[in-house]
Image (cartoon, rainbow, N blue to C red; front, top):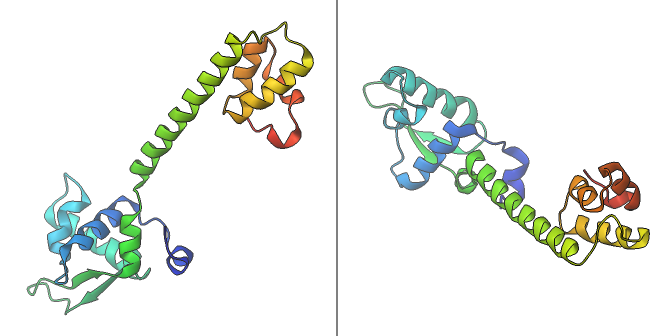
Length: 176
């Protein structure tokens, strides 16, 4: 979890910025030069283009946001600035990347769908269906909705449209 100060000022640094922060987080107190981090820019780039992308990310995004600091002189022959990660940068480096977050989101969604499927099977096995009384349908629809079932799934169980199910539910639990 980001501290309040960091969360108020930092936006997602993008894939390259995240890769740079993660490398700097393990680099140690000596820091790194952009020349060493050039390969992070991606395949198929010349060494100079890769270094330019890394420098651009460092100078335009990470340094102004306070995620990295630089020391030394910017002399090409001396290797340029040495970049170091700040505590705020360490917090951002520890966050999941968008790919990791998307994977976690898909796992959570699959788990919810499994729960919803199990709830539907329980209700179908208990004899709920098109012939159930309206009061039973409303009660079951509310329980199935809380279990994560979609309106369409509930409607399929009772042989009605998702709009009919929507009318059975209280306004604050409708969703999509």
